[in-house]
Image 1 (cartoon, helix red, strand yellow):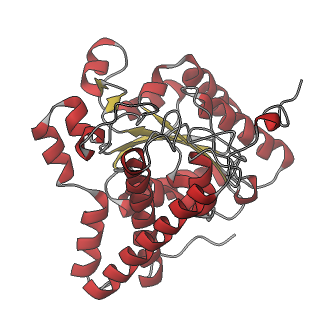
Image 2 (spheres, one colour; image 1 turned 60 degrees about the vertical axis):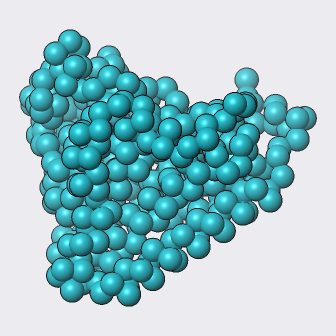
Amino acid sequence: MKKKKEFGKDRLVWMYTQMVRIREFEEAVKRAFIEHPGAIRGHAHLGDGAEASIVGTLSTRRDTDLVMPSYRCHGYPIVLGTPLRKIMAEIFGRKDGLCKGFGGSMHLADPAHHFPGTSGIIGQSIAHATGAALTAQVKKTGQVVFCFFGDGAAKQGVFFESLNMAAVWKLPVVYVLENNQYQAYTHFSLEDANAIAGDPLSKKAEAFSIPGTTVDGTDPLAVYKVAEKAAERARAGKGPSLIESKFYRLSAHGNVITVPPLPTQFPEHEAVAVYGNKAEFAKWKSKDPVVKFRARLTKDRVLIEAGAKRIEDAARAEVKDAVKFALASPLPAPEEALHYVYA
């Protein structure tokens, strides 16, 4: 297949559109805990701040390539084309959701869009993606598997075992280590001191004799450039690569409110409220990937202000419709609980 051409205006606008759709979706999920108390049961792990990393990486993807992230997983199917209504309904635990309401936020799956599924187990995506890449190699499908996981997962044994296997067998997989600065409530700098190899985390690749690169995860074009190189290597049969994409998670580790009392202020779901580091939050907020990319595109006249606003208004309307759809969707009946359980 021919190498992809450099991005033109339409592709850049597409990238911004997807970033805005992800951001608006995550903000709506966050608001739902306040505006519709009890509607979302269990945890919802948001990816606001990761938009450039997600879109930049998936801009290198070909139609049949697989995408396998971990439990912070809302943004990926949005880019792949999964209807927002179906994703939102699943997060709300409704019958019209992707998994008929039985999976929830951490267990999204849409095989029709080459999104096999996610799990709440830390590091699970690494093993699953490695297995999928082995299947692609054996069956000669030409697929590349894009695997996403957090910096905390890079401490798991499955990380080392999977990357070793992928390196030895030259499997077509791109590992994207999303360093969003925090492993739950522990800043990654403390992890470096006490638990894992230091900064940059991409140097872990040296142990497997594969390429390791750290990239600014707030810049979708920088991410694209690195991911495209890794994908080309995988397609050429040369094996895996490890990308550390560095950005900042703007929300708390996980939103979970199931019973009263409910918080009265929206900021309680923000990272700054949980971690208490106002200077750190302000520093990273100034690098907000959506705001930054918008400014870049308008400065370069790829977008005018009116065009950017139309994209943003359309995304908000689409997300509002998804929430309305989810709330109107019925809950699964109790007797359906065992319908999709297999022994």
